[in-house]
Each structure stands twice: as C-alpha cells, then as structure tokens.
Length: 523
Image 1 (cartoon, rainbow, N blue to C red):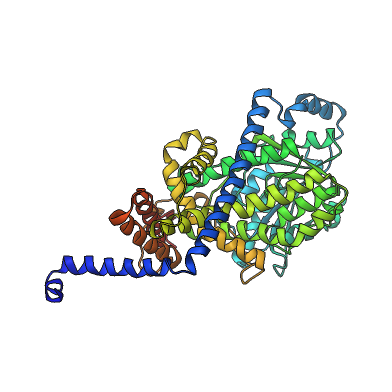
Image 2: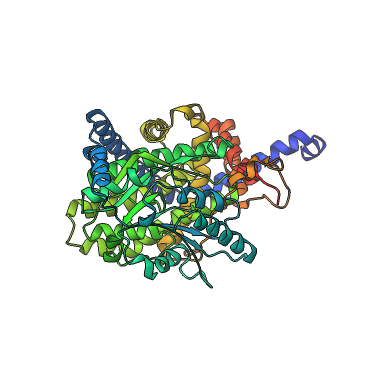
C-alpha cells in the first residue's frame, strides 16, 4: 500500500490532505475544546442578536425620519437665518484649521478650497497647522500660504518643532494663539478635504440659531470611490455610517461621534469639555463624548457633503482601520466610569453612549464578524456538536448585510465582495479593539493615512501589482490556509454546503494576503 501511494503523486497528495485534516479534527474534538467552542458559539450568537437588534432599531428610526421628514436640521429655517445674517451684518469670527503632516500630494487642494470659502474676509482666519518633518515641503506650504495672503486671504501658517499630541496637539496649540481669542467658531478640515464655497453659509447659521449646539457635522463625498474595488467597498461602509449611524444619533440623542473633520465646533464647547486631549488615537471622539457629557448638543447635516479621498492602498487602509478600531475601544475603557457617574445628562443618553455607541458598534460589531465568520463557521464544519441554526447562520447575517448595503444602491451588485472584504478586515479590527481594551502594545500608534491626491491621474500610477517580498501579509495568509483546510474537509464530508462560503472567504484572505488589493503607486 505504501509503495502504491509513493508511486502515485495524486494519491500521495490526497493522503497527505486527509491525514492533515484528520489531525485537525482530532484536535478540534478534544474534550476540553468542545465546551470552549460551544461557549464561543453561544457568545457569538448573543452578539449577533445584539447587533441585529441595533441595526433594525436604527433602520426603523431612519424610516420614520425620512417618511415624516423629521431630520433635525430640516426644523431650522436655514434661508431665513442666512437672510437675517446678511441683513444685520453681524458675522461671527470663524477660524478654519487645517492640520497637516507631510501632505505633499494634497496640500494645494485643501488650502485652496479653504481659502475659497465664501465668508466676509475680515471675519475669517485660515490656520494651516504644519507638523511636516520635510523641510522642503514646509517651504512649499509656506509659499502656498503667502500666495493666498497676497490675494487678500487671512492665512496663518503655524509650525511646531515637535509632534507632541499629534493632531490633537496641533489643534490645541492652534486654539491657544492670540489672534484666535476673538473667534467664536472653529471649522476643521483634514488635509485631503475640499469644502464647497458655501460650506460656512450652510453650517454656521445653525450655531447662531441654537446656542445649545456645540457641533455641526457635515457628511463626506468621496472623489476616488471609483478608483478600485477596495474604495468602492469602503464607500459602502462609510455611506451606512453617515446615512444611518450619524443621522440616528443626531435625531434621537443629539449626539454622535465627531468625525475629526468637516465639522464646525463652538469654541466655548471645546473649552468647557477640557480641550483637545491626546490620550487615545481618536481625539475627535474623545472631545465629542466629553462635550456631550457637559450638556452640549450636536446636529448632523446630511445634505452638506465635503469632498475627500479614501485610502486606496491596502497598507494605508490597514493603518487607518487599526486607529479607528483601537482608539474607540481604549476610550471606552477610559470613560465608562465617567459616563456612568455623569448626572448632567439623562440615564437614557448615558446608556446610549455605553451600550449602543461604544459596546455594540465599536466592539461587538468587530468581534462578532471575525469570530462568527472566521472561527465558529469553520469550527462547526469540523465539530458536529457545534450545530448552527438557520436564523443564526443565515437570516440574521443576511438582514444585517442588506441593511448596510441599501445605503449605497449603485454598489448592491458588489455585496458579496463587501462581505468577504469586511470579514478579512474584521481580523485587524478585532485585534485592534482587544489592544485598545487591554492598553497593550500599539495602543497609541499614530500613522497618518497616506493620501495620493492627483497622483493617480499621472501616467505612472498603476493598479495593484503582485510584488514578492513587499506585499505579503502573513496573518491573512494563515487565515486563508485554515479556511481552505476547513473548506476541503466540508467538501469531502459536510452536509450544510459551508464549503461554498469557506472557499470564497479563503480566496479573499489569500488575495489580500498576497497584497493584490487596492492600488499601487511607484515611488
């Protein structure tokens, strides 16, 4: 028999795979492992139900808001407010802050868009906060600012000799400048954001009408959503965030997480909240939560969109998602007690902050995606004791997916790719959330998201290319191998046809593990 196997390569490969699967099966069916897997499945089922209820609740709120036309910002008579403002000529002093760090590709776009804002020139200050370490680039930014100064725009170019506090540190020092003391409002735009000329006219009047408003947040429009498949899939997730999560928070609790850009703050609200802090990598969310606990209200203006750029390289997107997942979990750890003990806001709002805003959306959403799709389903293939019912395995995930996908109708045909892509990214988001909760290594890692600006319009810009030694991502490759292992076993022995999903998901892990995703721009 052994000689027969050694003489037949196909038979030898089959035998190797079978023995390997058999060994994995013995490990998975160990007496100690099965109870742990059953407990994990129970927890995943519970988290799936929590996420399902949260998504359905938000969907119902959005349906009511849209059917009844009760978006909070529509209650204001914006045109009347603008007419009164122009008639009385009582324009408030507005500061526009643009934090930058080595933004070679986009600095002209953002500075130009900010300087073109329509507002009385004597009531507008453009503050460019440059933390760049490239001296040549600093000189280029300074020249760009001087050009606009010569055109009559009040531009202040500010630099630091250090990066203490990163973006939060730069914004804090910018507000401490002497010429800012007369400013009533501050508008923040990240380096790749390009507001329309009438942005201030469509946001500032809300602040003047309601003195309880501390923040007016605008939506985002993506200039490079069609650049590659990865940017299309990002657009689907972010459209849901703005169209549903931010709108629901604005409509129900007058609270949502500040997105760090494309927003107008009342400077008094920032000061009362304790100013900018750099204790986490989500300084924007930190400020929003503290301001909310002081009683300030927020409003999301969904019909005002600001153009910006999605990260189109996988490396940049991974760093961004680490920061966006680790920071909220770490902030949850730091602020839970403070939220619970705050008596200035209602119990309902405190529960919303702790349960819905932080726990379900920032932790459970990541964990259930990874552990359910990438651990429990593969384990159920190897261990029959882990029986997944159809509601848990199919109906609940399908409902959650549909509710997310309908926010971007033009990309509905990409929903399968979106599921596979999000499952792969859940690996990194779950890891980042655990790091944030435990305050482990990399908890305060800050990597500025790389922007390409006009680079992709140049001739040397290319789509993704496989480059050995530069684009291997070993976590993805390991997960791809494990899922492929389970897919083969299910194909040979299974009854639930999970192998269809497992083959597709392992393929997604391999594609991203080999770096064949996003765009590649030669240096």
